[in-house]
Image 1 (cartoon, rainbow, N blue to C red):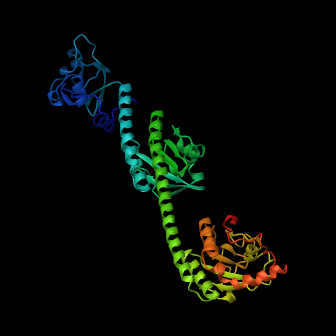
Image 2 (cartoon, rainbow, N blue to C red):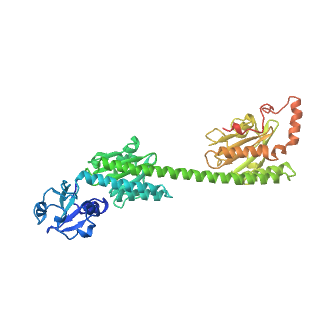
Image 3 (tube, helix red, strand yellow):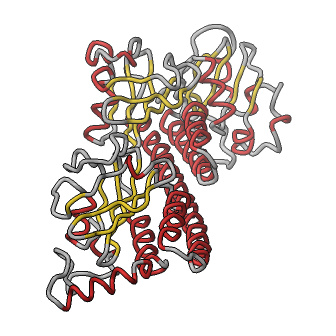
Length: 462
């Protein structure tokens, strides 16, 4: 990195990099001295040097060459703090009509990298404390601009077909919320697919055809797998080098860690909410079970069961059926339906009926999509279902109007309660006694052998 005559660069060198620099006007008077330079030449402070002749800090034979608007030497020797020691060489460059004395480029670059590393370390500490993803993205963009000097940069989140711009610097022409199709985001997509940072030196527009790069001539693109991509852009060629890439990777690494932390926290909050929801469900189940003990008829038990299932487990419909002479007969349905809306009597060997299938197998079934699985729903609007066997005498079908898997936890709790915790298991005592008589005469209902039937069927959920 060479010293330039750019005024902004001058300010960065003097104010941010904490370098030992001095500034001399055309009369050979020191107009600015950094604290680091004052310390290096053994001065008590900057005030003791500013306004004094440059001969205070450099040899007199070199000082004459700095007076006037003429050519200046490339380097100058600084007075050593100890006698008989060689003085360090400083590069000279005219900046805004004055002369800047600064350590050689290698020293400048090393100092800038050191400053950037310190600042990135502080950024990492901030990212560890951010409470939202929006704030996290904002911190990264601010650090890219203020610490790394990337005036034009963005963060884009990836999905299967596009990148959504999530945060940008002030000079970036894109806005948060804009979508870039993968085919329109060549540089972003290329780096993301191979999961490797890339420095594109020049010819970005011609090479990529990106809508995101209409005026970009060089760029740094760093993937943040699996989240998305960070990119720094420039409208001039060769604006970035490997040092910039390494610093960008460090910043993006901290960002990736923060994204993972937010994801873990979100999952933990979700798990905590799920646990609290389950706790409330357990309490509600105990309450309903206690109420069932006061029911005087089997139909009252059915109705209370259906009401509880709909309220506690958030199913849209619940139906309970009994098997009578090889036929599944609906006995009770949810509050929004009547028995006429439910299945008519269904043979237990009917293949396209989930309830019949459940009874025959003696297992619980979770069905993501009834029609896709080949089952005929009671109503066209019912898309997913949980079907539970009820001992030897029937089954319960719980349905929702949206496709998608009913959770196994819901299945477990519903099955366990309906079969073992509630008076449903004894609601058909008379029926079971009658079946027992048939069993003694080898006339059990089809598929209801005691060796295959059990009220504990949660392990059979599919």
